[in-house]
Image (cartoon, rainbow, N blue to C red; front, side, top):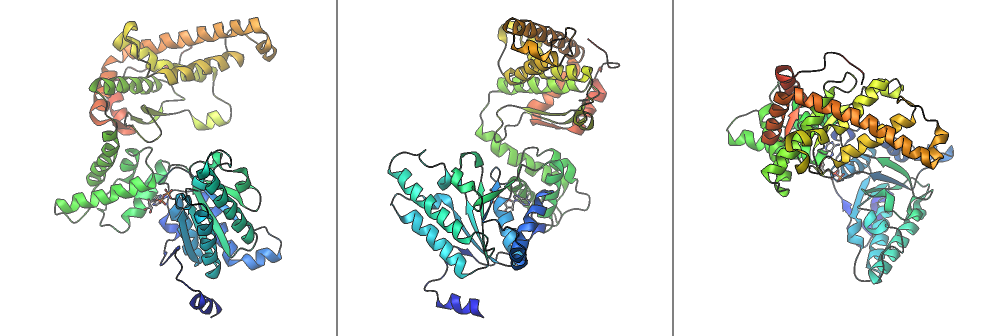
Length: 465
Ligand code: ADP
C-alpha cells in the first residue's frame, strides 16, 4: 500500500513511535462521561472525511488536564488503540534542552514522523514544561523554550482541521499555559480528568483484577473506601502488591485481605515520607474525629463516607468526607438549621482542641475549618437567616459591616458552644475514634458507624439554637 511504500522510503526508523499499542477504552476505568468525549475523538479518525464534508470542525489538539497517575497517557493510547492508528509520544520535558534549536528540531522530527505514518496520535506529556506562558522564564533557557514552543505552534497549525494527525497533550497545570496554545484550532478542547470517585476506584480495581486470580467474594467496595484520594496508578499498584502477597503465602487466589494489606502498604509508602511525632498524629486524629462525631448528629450531613489522617498528595492534614444531603443542597432546600449544623461541624475541631488541650495549648490545625465556619456564619447573616436581618445594601455601609461581623460572631459562638456540648457528651465515642485513627490512620464508613452505634450519644432530634 501507499503507506507502506512511504514508510520504507523514509530514511530512518521513526524514533518516537510506540509499537504494538493495544490499549482499549475498556482498559481505562472510572471516567464516566469523559469516555464519551474521547469516543468522539476516535470518530475524527474514522469519520474524518465525512465530518470535513459536512463542515464539522476537527480540533487540532486535545488537552487532558489532571493530576499524575489518573490515566491521561493511558487514555491517549486508548484513543489510538480504538481508532487503530499509530501512536507517537514524547514528554515535553525532553524538548527543553540547553542547546538552542534542539527542542525545536525534535518537535519537527516528531511531527514529520507522525505525518509519514498517519493516521496517528501525537501524545505530548507534561505540556507545561514547554508551554508555560512565554516571557515568564528569563535567560537563555527561556529563549530556547520559546523557540520550541513556536515550533510546536507551527506544527499544530499545520494539521488543523485535517483529522489525520491529532495531538493529545497532558498537563496538571492548564492555568499556566501560554494563551497562544489554547487558541481555537490548537488545544481548543480541554478535558478534565479528576481523581477517581469511590465507584471509579471500584471500577479501576476491577479492571486491574481482570488478569489476576481473584477470589469470588472479593469486596472491592471495602478496598475502594480505604483508598480515598488515590489515583489509578496507585490502585494498579495495590493489585500488583496483593498478588505478591498471595504468592508469598503460597495461595492461588487473591483475597480482600490481600488487597487491604496492599492498600496499607501503598499508603504507608506515602506515610513514610511524612515523619510525624506521635503527638502530632493524636492531634490530627482529634481534629478529624471531632468533625465526624459532631456531623453524625445532624440529619442533613450525617452521611460520613470516610475519616482519615493519612497524608495524601495535595492534602496536608486529615480529612473527613462529610456529605451534605446532595439533593436538598442542589434544590436550595437546606433548612436554616442545616446551615447552622454545617457551621457547627466546621468549628468542631477548634472546640475539640480546647476540650482536649485547654485554651493555653491550642494548636492551629483547625485554622482551615475554622475559616470555613467563619465565612459560612457570615453568609448566614448576610443571607438574612440570623435573628437580625441585613439587606444587601447594608453590605456597602462601613459601620454596618461591623454589625454584620458581630452578628456572625454570635452565630459562630452559639455553634461553638453546641459543638463543645456534643463533644463532651460523646467523649467515649471520641476516644474510640481517635484511638482507631492513631492506630490505623483511617476509618471506613462502616467502622465509623459501628463505633457510633456502640458509644454514641446522638442528639435526640433536630433542635434549634
Ligand atoms: P497519567 O498519564 O495521568 O500520569 P498514566 O496513564 O500514566 O497516568 O497511568 C499509569 C498507570 O496507572 C496506567 O498505565 C494504568 O495501569 C493505571 N491507571 C491510571 N488510571 C487508570 C484508570 N482510569 N483506569 C485503569 N488504570 C489506570
